[in-house]
Image (tube, rainbow, N blue to C red; front, top):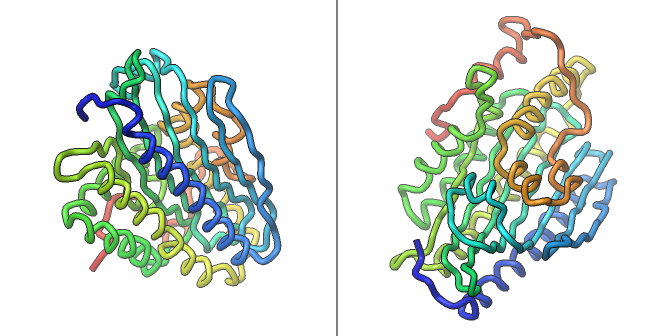
Amino acid sequence: MTNTHHMAEDTTIKKRIVQYISSLQQQIITALETTDGKARFHTDKWTRPEGGGGVTCVLEQGNVFEKAGVNISAVEGTLPASMKEVLNVKGDHFFATGLSLVLHPLNPFVPTVHANWRYFELYDGNANVIDSWFGGGTDLTPYYIFPEDGRHFHTTLKNVLDEFDADFYPVFKKQCDEYFINKHRGNEARGIGGIFYDYLRPEANRDAEWLFRFQQANGNAFLLSYLPLVEKRATLPFSGQHKEWQEFRRGRYAEFNLVHDRGTLFGLKTNGRTESILMSLPPTVRWKYDFHPQPGSREAELEEYLKPRNWIE
């Protein structure tokens, strides 16, 4: 827990985090539009009646991405009692900023990816900061397994984390493996994981500046971890059957986001913008009653990988 200090001291870090989030959004959007080569992001600026707002950017029906959302927000206001309970925190008012993205490719051989980097502050009745923390992470959801893709994704993340603390990757990978789980599907993982961290609070040896640098390093590594996989797989030929399997697996993705995802819950409970919160849902999905892939097929192979494994040799 951070010591109580006056809000005025914190505006600089708060402001700089908001600026960084905004510039990262632009950087990612530019790279994705270049990769897609056809579709452009539609920009939707919105304000929240209780305080703050955001910029939702969505691309649809591209050459490479069937649907892609890259959202930023910076919101503040009174923290509802229900959310105090969920977050297990005290405080009357909150400030939250972050970037959240979900990319759903057209080609079933290209994995879906999700990433989020966020920063929170909590204040007492006199506008003093009584708590602050960073959270974030990114995870990969393939429909067909290419082990070298999983290795590239995880290795890129580990290399970034190792620069800050060699203990981070195993801990944050484990947290990711434990979080993105459809418990109602017999503890089936949503994908092949990545990293997930939350409640990283400033401490004496790791102050807010250190944590901010850590957050930036993670944000800046995103395109390096993901775009090479897109470039490798986006032109592979695929059939209607491949697409059906992708849509079936997207159903599991939708289930996680609607049943278990904390961000979705937080957004909806704090009267967030529903369109922006549900941007993460895939464009087309299918549910088949009691469906199982053919044993020994490439589709069945995926299910072998939906449990924690070591992706780095």
